Image (tube, rainbow, N blue to C red; front, top):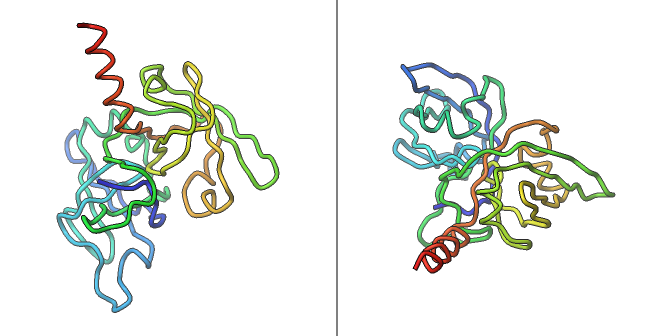
Amino acid sequence: MFTGLVEGRGSITNISSVGPSIDLTILPPPEMAHGPDGSPVAGIGDSVAINGCCLTIVRINDGGWTFQAGEETLSKTSLGLAKVGDDVNLERSMPVNGRLGGHFVQGHVDGTGVIDGIHEDGEWTTMWFHVPQSLTQQMVGKGSVAVDGISLTLVEVESERFSIALIPHTLEVTTLGQKQVGDKVNIETDILGKYVLKMLAEANAG
């Protein structure tokens, strides 16, 4: 389980094909690599959300974390388009006694969206995303959504689009500040919306 509060941006340093899968190596930022006492803060077997995709660290070499991404992950998320040198949002899984500052994020991407518009108004930036209607059916204005692993508040929700308002801090510390119209992003809807939609479908069917 994650919170959607990005801990830092990492950089992809290597991508190796292994059949239909890939080994993906990411260099985490210094604050995520070691704690105040210099000890590693992550180890083999730990779960990390990479642009919202939950993957497991399988190797650690020269400070880089290596993950294995299978064919399903590559086909259903934006990681299939990843390139060496790309920055990615990173968040380690939340400890049981951790503080939930965003919303419940599973790290299971529901689909991808495309940035449809970027509008600046003073310090605020509004981004619009085009997504399948199956995803907007699980959204509601002022509700939560994870975009590339970032917990955000929905502003407007249309049939196949939604918008979010971004403050300068979010643009600075996440990859959204590097995005342009036409870029693909990972979308995970709020788990509460999924349960509500399922209950309504079952009630209507009955």
